[in-house]
Amino acid sequence: MFLEDIRNQVIPYRSDRESTIAVKFEPEGRRARRLVVHIFEPNGWDPDEAAEGFVRECVAKLLMNELVPYEIERLRRPQAKRASLFTLRPIQPWSVERTGGGLIQRVPEEDRELGRLLGNRDTSEAIFLPDEDLVCFSLPDELRHELRTTLSYLDSIPEPALPPWLPEELLKGSDYRVSIDAEELKTRRLAAVGRATMNLGWDGRGTLQGAVNEYYLLVRQIRWQMFLARLRIAVLDTLNQSLAAILAPRGVAATVSTANLAGLDELDALESRLATGAASLGQGYSAISLWQFGRDVHATAAAATVNPSARVEPTGTEPADEGQLRSG
Image (cartoon, rainbow, N blue to C red):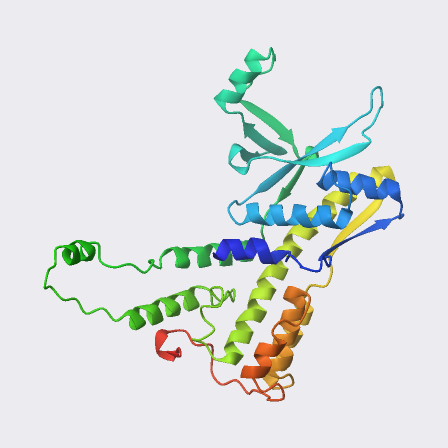
């Protein structure tokens, strides 16, 4: 669930089709739009939509791989001296390894056998891909460490299950009695998930809502949005550098940026205002909702459970163990 939520929320889907990625061109025109759309999606037509899909795909791969490479495919018209269109073709991350000046891609035996059947002369076991033909995405060291640590902690939390011998004993009609406190097991598991995701702020798809007070729940949501923003920044920085290198020789410039999404400065400011009591819980929830969904979907629910005008003075740190979690 954790990885799936990152994939779905890093560039959130909006029901009103409001764009969350914006592509700006210089100069503006059909040629520039066609060039950029073709880089992301050869059969696409809308640059913002094509860029959204590309960023989502790239982030999904980064969650599971240290390096996510794309090859710059150059398309030329017959007898043309230079390429007229470009496309970023994905390369399977598991098939490459870094070497001086580029990547070495291992070619599976079945692909080489197919090449021989088709009459290809070159059926090498490996292909060298120079850096000038590549766009490689990776996460900053700190962000990658935080993500891997969180995944490791989550993997160590066992799924709730009955002892393997219990169903058989029950089927046999045994009088053996086992005392199992389901609520205690649930509370302990919630505490473990809360500790594992505390730094990144994931709320376990709402499972922590009844276990953490309103202030710290909002702080977690801010941290989660910060994590997603840092992911977007890591991908967009590399993407924009690559677009500049590809398009500059064609006299075109394009920049991909977020639209209607929270930036780190805005999230930092909101967290500071909450910590000092300058913003209410209602204002905080509304801001997060607008950034995440494009509309204030929490307004009604927040009004029913939170006093919008209340200013909260936090005390201590976020709950870190089951003893500090609410049971209800």
